[in-house]
Image (spheres, rainbow, N blue to C red):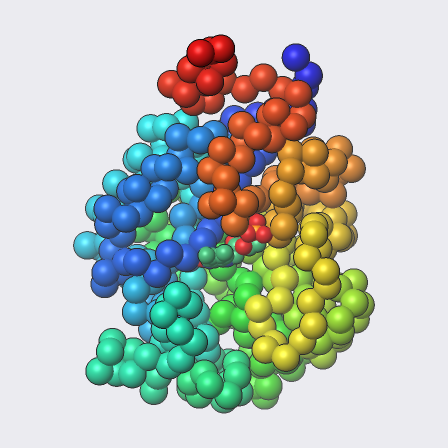
Length: 369
Ligand code: FNR
């Protein structure tokens, strides 16, 4: 049988993934008061039996106002630990490593689930449009809530909420924690001059715009066990400059992302999961196939830190080539995993590697009749 890098185990701190395939966080907008339920058992269970090395559970809010929609996952209170632990234990029991993304939706909060519509949810329907947080008063788009700028006291309290959520994630048995710093949500909106026009020490220069995000990462790293990996997902550019490797000095671009990744590395962040965009509602994106891979490559070699590549990675051969060319260290496969939960097995076929996962299926599939 052939060998492929994609199927080599990879170890970070005390955690070993049995291959380089990770399923990225994907919101299911199906929680009740933040708590995961049987839908999530079915959904993550169907993924967990099918061979990805790592499964990162969807964006999970650090406070109720940090949800994108009223039905987002949350971990702002201790009652939410047990329902999360059910999913975490299930993932681990099937041979994958359980990860979790923690998040705050910032100025993109209090909206309807996308499968219902694209509108602000009223208070009567469980929304909180008059209590949405941001760096400044700038809206994400006309039909989104007007954020209230966080005060300095509010920033302090917010750092503590990320810390408390990380401690709960550890109690739930999560092994890889990812901080959501991408897609125009709270942390990204502080990083980018396209949304942050504060005049205090949290706005203006790159150093100032990174201050709150780095305070969160530093405080979380201090409580997240040393032996467990900490990932940070970034948007490496806002596409204010349509060239993904172009400059947007006063906004957000890949060169600032590299500087940010260097600072995260100093704090003890292990992996940068490199996404892009989601921040400006009126920009043009590059053609989709593998479009974020050059960004993962730029951050990996610019900041000398392991990265994850994500976005329209569809085949095992594409994934293998990214690893062979040393453009990234992990391959994240999102929607293609929803379309084809058998993605890992198909990638094995694609690369001529004989996989035996799950054994309950493969023996039967090899039989002639
Ligand atoms: C997402 N994405 C996403 N990203 C993130 O950081 N946190 C999240 O909770 C979500 N939620 C989410 C839900 C759904 C239904 C989709 C399709 C996507 C983005 C996702 O993790 C991934 O980066 C993109 O989907 C691009 O990868 P694929 O799908 O092209 O492999």
